Image 1: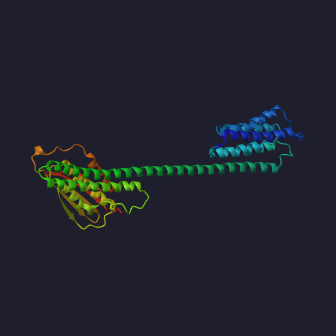
Image 2 (image 1 turned 90 degrees about the vertical axis):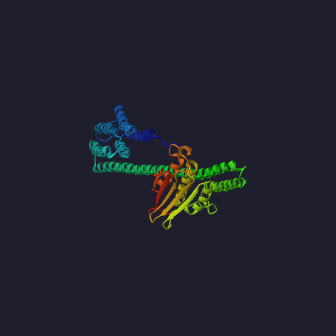
Image 3 (image 1 turned 30 degrees about the horizontal axis):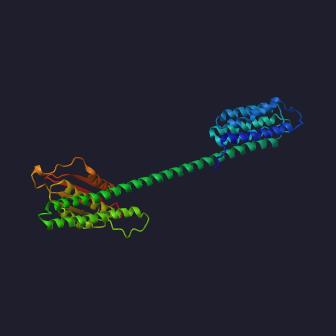
Amino acid sequence: MRQAPGPLLIDGITALAVFGLMAQQLITRHVLLAGQHPTTVLTWLLAVVIVAPILTHRRFPRASVAVCLSAVAIYAAGRYVAYPGYVIFVLTFDIALHSDEQVSVPTLFASGVVLGVAVDLQPAEVAVLATYIASEVFIGGAWLAGWNFRRRRARWTELQARTERAERERQEEARRAVTEERLRIARELHDVIAHSMSVIAVQSGVGNHVIDTQPAEARQALAAIEATSRAALTEMRRLLGVLRQEGEPRGSLTPAPGLADLSSLATQVQDAGLQVWINVEGQRGSVPPGIDLSAYRVIQEALTNVIKHAASAAATVTICYRDDSVTVEVANQAPAVPVAHVPAPRTGAGHGIIGMRERVAVFGGEFAAGPRPGGGFQVRACFPIGQVTG
């Protein structure tokens, strides 16, 4: 791809063209009017000084204008044949194009005054009203053209900047969406794997312990392991299917679990040796799918933690439906074994508590987890549904 010519090259070509126009007049005009002077070395030097500021006007606008107009005044006083107004027109246009109004407006008036004086110093045949008017009109037209181009270029630059900012914001939003989706999937996988593996670990331990003495109970433990592992595989296929089939119909994928599926969850947990009671308060209304899934996952994770970390053999799940909220609470009883036999609690929040807290925070809800006053542990999550849509 060709690169656009640089500013110095553009200014150099412009200066060379204007100087060539003056040189052509200095060389070809041999008939002088009354009062005009012939071309000398000084004439050529002044012509160079008049044109040279076109090369420097971008970096030194005020100095370039001062040098050009001063040289034009001296050139006009010498009454040489070449008309210097072409250079003033070009320089006025360039200053209006590349400088702000604080520089371009004084340049407009200074150019008009100097060119008017220059015309007035010419012979009577040149210093006529038409020459005055034409010179001033061309200066004004050159300034307006440069000012207009500069405004258009500024608007175009601003438009490009806005487009680039919008594109960066879109990319940032896309990256944020990807990150949030990864976190969501990580929580989903954690919930599925942690719960299922906890149940499998407990059942495999039971089966290994009683396989010789109680074969029937061992078979029951193996059946629970099979059912739990199949359920975990089904949910993992659902999550991986969502990743693989982005943009495709998802009607064939297994629906996400919700509070209506707590009976199946309770059966799995009871097979692992934890007795679960489910209490429902209020009438279930319209619960958004996201809250329905998150509430289910909170209960699932809380029961998993009871299986892994608590010595109690029972837990109570309470679901409270209200018009503007859904509250779930999981509480396990104090262990019915001597304190010396109770496993030491883990330090730190763990990924399970963090995941539950994040799920609730997504919907602007309230989450609390900690020991109960009478012993045991309690997890409570309240999801507001008044401002959430399905």
